[in-house]
Image (cartoon, rainbow, N blue to C red; front, top):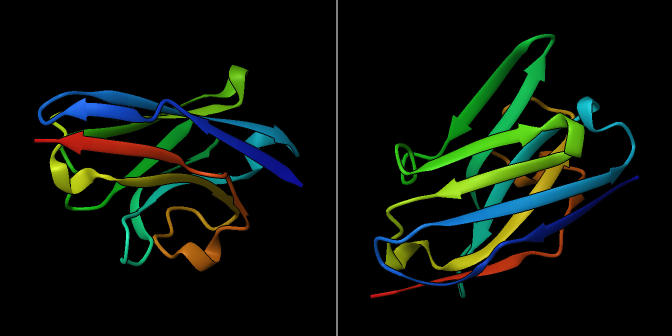
Length: 125
């Protein structure tokens, strides 16, 4: 089992920044690829970013809608994954979820085995 706890959401003005954190506990953190997804009211859950690692190489993946504005990273010593969100737009408003899975870089929610409870991000104009 892997437990995931997100934090860092909140209300921000358009153009502002937030950093989300996802603290993992349980099974060995390094075994899993990590992803961030978001879900706005009335919409399907959508892929935001993912990170995986193999040996000394880290791989990152982004949705086109956030590329260049969001950055996913990890701190293996803290078993934590981050999502730095810059230049936020009202359309980024959603509940953001952290997920862990064994498929590297996948954008499909069904391929992630563990999920956090979500953190609300609201971007006002």
